[in-house]
Length: 296
Ligand code: SAM
Image 1 (cartoon, rainbow, N blue to C red):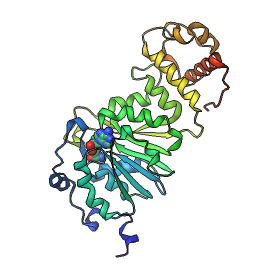
Image 2 (tube, protein in one colour):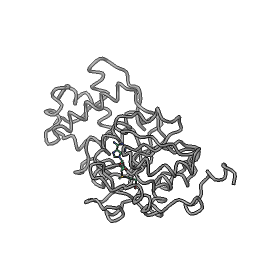
Image 3 (tube, rainbow, N blue to C red):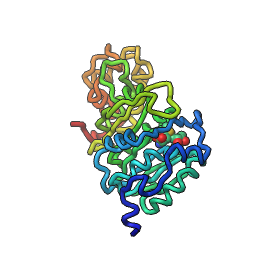
Image 4 (tube, helix red, strand yellow):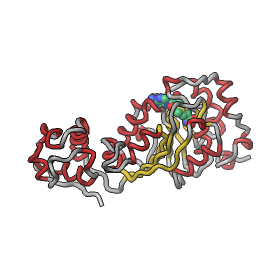
């Protein structure tokens, strides 16, 4: 069989890939809690995650934490041009070697810590990240990727449900916070679906959800991003306080008046657009920097 045919999307049985449970057993991949190892073994569910990512044709997909490779297999069965899987656990890299051998032109394994890696250096655009993220590092990874959101076409990411709900939360809800504002400022966001704990092996203590983040076409310049990070840190650092107090160090009441925001309001009541107006006011106040961009 010609290699071109072999490396296109083919079911596991045709490629004679072992069952995921056998991969785990053979590699001695005993789930390590410290690495957030809760594996997905249901092929239908894995295919559903990849469908949630939309059209991957021609894209360089980066998967963080492939583990035994269930999601990796589903990604390889999609139209993605190439899959690069970044995994910290050397046992998983060993377990994935036969899969890499079955897809020599479409799968690259990279052993390393995703927290210490600029994943944009691994593959050229167009790039997408699709991953069942380890719970313990999901939020720091997202914050890191949001800082370079314009370098990606999209993110399809599994988080614990509570984090997923914070990402998509609306103002004036308990889940609304800094992560909601930053994510929604830079991306359109939605929850694709929720998964029960029983979908994983071993089951975690909480439910999970797949979040889709699509970077907005116009991304802010670095100065605005830094100003927004400072502003949201101050505002939500003391979310129970009125903004005139919470923002005292960066302009307080005068800044709020400038942005036409009532100083007695609390951070959790401000829309993303109001945060953006406040960010621009803070930049004008700091050094008269020009507005670089506006959201629709
Ligand atoms: N993708 C697999 C699945 O769906 O069955 C495994 C997902 S499991 C929730 C998370 C994976 O991330 C594990 O394989 C774990 O070893 C890996 N991991 C944990 N921390 C990591 C890090 N800092 N960098 C890269 N991979 C990491």
